[in-house]
Length: 178
Image (tube, rainbow, N blue to C red; front, side, top):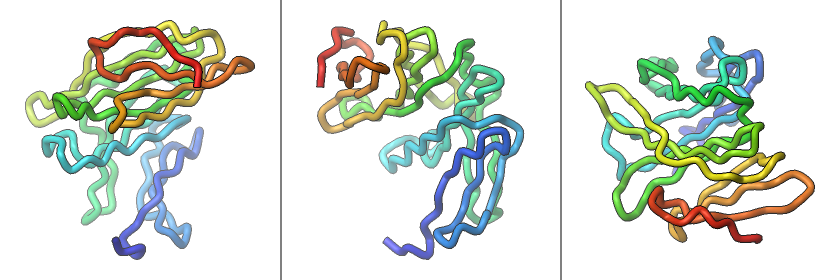
């Protein structure tokens, strides 16, 4: 890896999303949304349409937007005709690539205590999505992280602890304390 090619995705709140180099210089921005969370599921095994995505929570709209960074032109552009409508406060965002199906699944934690699992897929050279399951995660659910190798998603529940649940969409939704 060459550090000179490394970039940081920065959630700038009402300032949107910034892409910065390691010296802190902005190289691109997408200021059309109020960004609360950023997820970069850069997995080379994914189909080209889904590879090198930048997923951001649009806090104002209660939605998740899929963007792509064009390094040559240093531009961020939206690649989904419709955002994933969460219609609730977004309190966390992470993503899982299934080693069984090679499908991309963002997880979105919500203010109402849900962990929503979505599937992203290619549709007419763009990105589309559908919700595949909703997991009762408890009021105060927050940040999440995924372990692709062990097929688990981890999430925090405020004042309670950290939990995990199986990440495959057909799996049991029983949560385990970590």
